[in-house]
Image 1 (cartoon, rainbow, N blue to C red):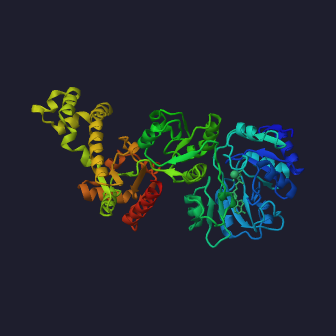
Image 2: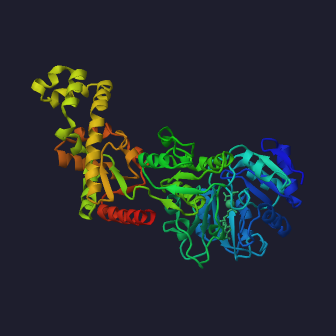
Length: 540
Ligand code: TXA
Ligand code: MG
């Protein structure tokens, strides 16, 4: 088949795409999530061509794309208030809503299901093509069935040239993972596939929203998936992929020991790795990971067939969608190479870290208090004192005994001496920490928490497989600091102002535990601990 190459920035090309679609043809189009392979959603013969071009199983329904709210009502038999609230909050955008299907939608579009999924994409070219076609468009992701979804035009061209009527070049896709698929058919709204709109955002609008169990775990044999697309091996490159659940330090150490492997990793892992590696985004940047994941899989595919060891992403925000995709890429195989989890515990002063640490310690965890570690005499050994004297003056240690107040006066006077102090003392603290951890592991501990107020600033987060942030409203933190440390409110405010803003901690957390009035911090901490225990047992 002759395939036309069209450019989304040219109005006449949009009209050409529309004309092909309204006469029953197939066109690959850009959307804000991934490229879609579009056909007239109301024409069973056109829809059938999608299944053929993708090699898509016939029991996997398609999403119907609209470019105006009025197009929705004719496709469904009911439009409940929750649906309209969702449209108001998230459309146009990466959310797909499932409702009972009307007679207008051919059974073939929904693979025979009594429901239909509808989405109003935000991409201007997608909207313009739907308008030009004059009909809602069915559009699955534009990959051959089972392969990674294309987020770059070059990937669409490589996969579909010769198989469809036209390809519309709209550049790179901004979100990078597909839309969130939400069913409004059951008693409680349920996410069947996480995507560009997060669970947190949906709950803020709808209240109770469930997560389908198939999002995070393989279906039990014999169970029917709520979303048929969930049962196929998916998003897979040609090489086998295994997910590795480990801190950056442990991930790199493990991967570097495996012969003939490649890494699909975070940007921060790159300098630690000695094997060929492709990054899919920063460790704490789920949006970047979403944008980068499928393109990284294509790159790995082009570069060979050696096994891929992928670094497990955090599930927060759009990270849940990244996790869901990469888990399928790996056929659900996740390995924890150390058999233990080191959990960093941090957050702003007065939030309640010690309360949580105490709750974990009571439930049998080892907790390492990093503040106490920095004051241990073993940190200030003869070598350390000699270096400090060379850097800050011999008089900071009269007769070899460190005068900590004088050292603090000199070191904390400005950023430069503070960095110098840290460069001398941090390696000693890390060595003390390593000895402490060795003792804990030798005693059989497998869940260990590092209570570290400056977890990120000190780089200790690179040792941790998870980061838990405890936070509380600022007023509560101020009150706690004043009461605990006998500070005035102004002094407490100054201390908080010297720390990073709350968002700094939230943006880096696997879990954020709230400790405001009415919150049960210990209960949240123990629930999270139970999840970690299950993950640890399942991934040994
Ligand atoms: O972002 C997206 O949603 C992209 C772009 C092109 O819009 N489209 C996309 O379509 O990802 P597709 O076909 O690759 O994925 C649709 C998913 C499948 O898992 C399918 O099983 C599920 O949505 N789905 C569609 N209609 C459904 C329905 N009526 N009931 C349950 N699941 C449905
Ligand atoms: Mg797909």
